[in-house]
Image 1: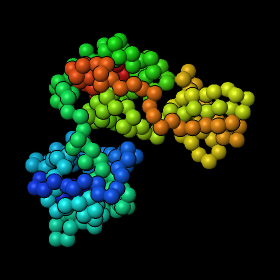
Image 2: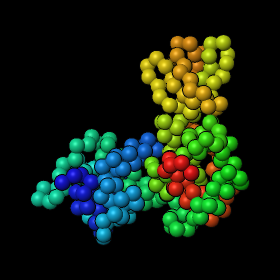
Image 3: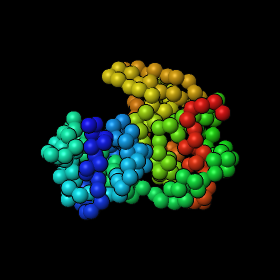
Image 4: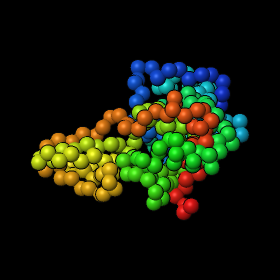
Length: 257
């Protein structure tokens, strides 16, 4: 049985999981865990962790583990005599899954936690108007290039994740969305969004929408920014307005409007 379905045996609510003892959980851990969850677990458990009756993966309560180390061991080693087989995951990968599940237990719970609370039509108006989001982001053929293209964001991000990105942009900056600043040897400053990089070059989309491949040996300096240029909208929009924008973004699946 696939690892995703076998997780059912672990996440039965009876005892709270202890804190991340001795381990500093980073946004990178949570991001890695999120990717693993959606690749292996969401097909059975759903994007909200409640796809199987009686099981809530984001409740932060588990039956067979009292510590993170114990839970990580179960994810990797399985449970003899049950449907839970060993999982082909490294310690770091298993820890990432644990970190993601724990993070979702403490994810924001505002009006948009109810998928019916937001109005997508109002959200689209706020997105293009009061929020000023199109200055930096692009949806289909409209908007700027400073931030990530959001045309299909609803196909890859959960509603709570979208909400958290709006209220706390620095919580998780994915590598493919990371802002880059580079200075050429002749002093020209180039800023944009990272697309890819390797030993010799950096590929990015600059703020004018141009694809750029920069050779590292021709740069005076470069840096991958650790903070997002996007402001928090926690105090700029009401809870209902945030719910509306989240509803709008959640409906963006890459299809032509």
